[in-house]
Length: 308
Image (cartoon, rainbow, N blue to C red; front, side, top):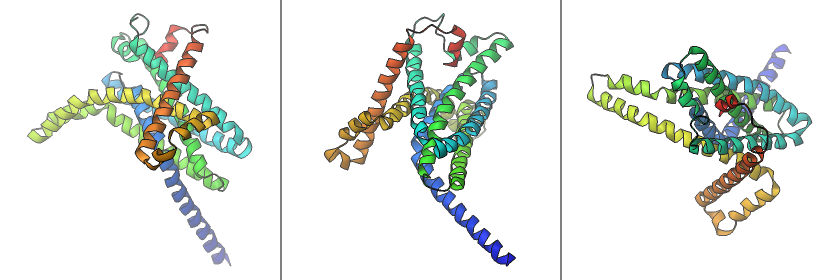
């Protein structure tokens, strides 16, 4: 009798693990786009610090990301179980934040007022004392963790949607697994990206010609990759934020459907490009409106701007 009970238990566990594996693959595919945005944004956010502080900053942001997940996963499961209607408004609030931050970054990059609008990377290079460096790094880390919170919420909700209707245990395991894999994967890649210059230098010092050339390619390509990720990271803010509004507001969703109706719907590449364009335009528009409204509000202390 005891053996029969054990076999039944093992069969249930096997079935549960199969369900978790299947739904995790589905959730990962659905979240793939946001994962790319998450990588680009975080690589851009933690770049620009002094070389010997890059990995500590990445590690600090990664720990903040883990904390975000520890808050978001139980919260998302609780909201899904008891107040599911609240998920979409919370997502849209996060989307608004991303669009606002994206426009702010663009405005800061074009600003000529160097006394007030230095980028954080410039501040970090000019910092003279250890206290200044700590303060500036903390500001950069806080900004990266805030952005990670919004993107993590988006990924978790997407993962949760992939297991809608499943048991609470299956939902919990799938969402937790996705959250763990995403955090480890993204920040491992971010750490690799920000250390590419050191990797290139090490390879360039090799005695083998081919390895030297490879190192030189990496050395020359690393700054371009970081700049590229900076641009992609800003665009990603609009794509993710705008996409949340497009899928959350029936009017915008209807407009997006009309844009890809007819013969265009038969062309997957065109459909994808149009949907991306709609999300980008919506994100830019909403971010611009948010920044315009914020311009009428009392100004924050300038020290808060380092979070940008």
